[in-house]
Image (cartoon, rainbow, N blue to C red):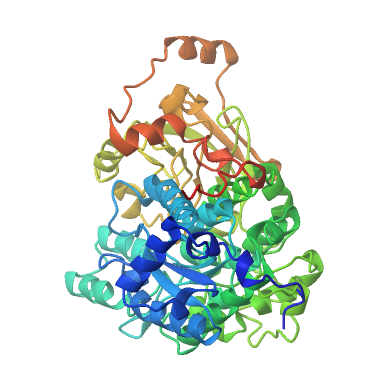
Length: 581
């Protein structure tokens, strides 16, 4: 039962501006609804609920969304609302090139404008694949109408030859073994067919599960909805619950500005750190916060990470389990209950109740999957922020997911200016490289990539793979998949393509990582750096026209969330309601 008592009247519904007046324009609106086969009793004086669906036939994470639309619709009708399905860009991770990140802001813009320009009183957002969660939430936040997020849910565990497989993480692992000659073609095909067994997002704690957990912790989903596997029968039941609840949210006028507060953002960051979140959480959470007018920075994330133990033993930061196991162990509500004392439990959620009220009765059913604070997977949170003369505006590393011997490391740089150059070199079995070298990829940031691709988990050179090495220090201005692991420093800012210090590094320069002191530096004297800076020439822009042209001229750097500079408005600078003449 919601704590919110005051309710709107039918005349106060946003959709009433379209359908209520006795004028020619509203006559046209009502007439066109009747053209679709509806009577006025279907849509007049009822909350009109948009179901924003990011389904496509090339998005396997969202393959069940046509069914979920009908599950949501059932709930909306049961609560006296009127549901309309609205398509939204399906930013799938697997097939979209050069990177789905290039289109996150496009989805955010589309979401905002679809909501604003149509007679919608509230919306249910269907997403899950990596960039759909932040894109949908960013757009709906600035649109300002009541919304509830319906996460796609993780797929079932992968299986092959008696082994449990985790999407992404085990693909990288077994690819290295194949490069080393330890996996046969038949085994490789078996892994290929067994690693993704159902609809749903990656079942590791990759970017998809990270972002739905963050959205859950923000109070924008039904409590614990992010943990339910896509194939579980609880998932369609949750979808119908979303349909029922969004109607009441409209009557209660429970808008996003009442939910996405400074305290809610901090809650989400703390939960992210405790789950072993993807490094991509940094970029997306900062962007989501800035859309809500919340000043949240890399330094805030690092501070929270230093004081939040990682307690979800889920790959890749954890060693043993997957999201299905996390769900059986109690899911996100159970994890949040474990760290309840660190959270602001007074924050409002889409239920109309507080975080604390939503956590009542939550239990951990397997304390090896969701660890107690006394026995964490890692003593600090998932991510750490680095600064230094290589990354004055910051860089990110995932300490728990890499070999601890690289937490303090110094070695010579091996620098690559493009992905093809790097790939050719690392496949050369005669490459002059040692385990102490530091692999560096540049021109892979927001503008240089283009679009900030997931190239940051640079492959281990074949020469080292065959000697048994599986990790080494790698640095780039790229991102990496949330399912990835290893000693990878990412999101170096400013990026090299715009003249950041990474552009000045040369092969053979010494690079020093000091994780305990949060430092990343090149050991090159300032006079030499100044000479290199003077000689540096800006590369040719990646795009001459279209979306890429717009993206390149307006995207912010990694430390600012990679939103467009003209979209960072917060609640105080809304575009407002459309004129209806």
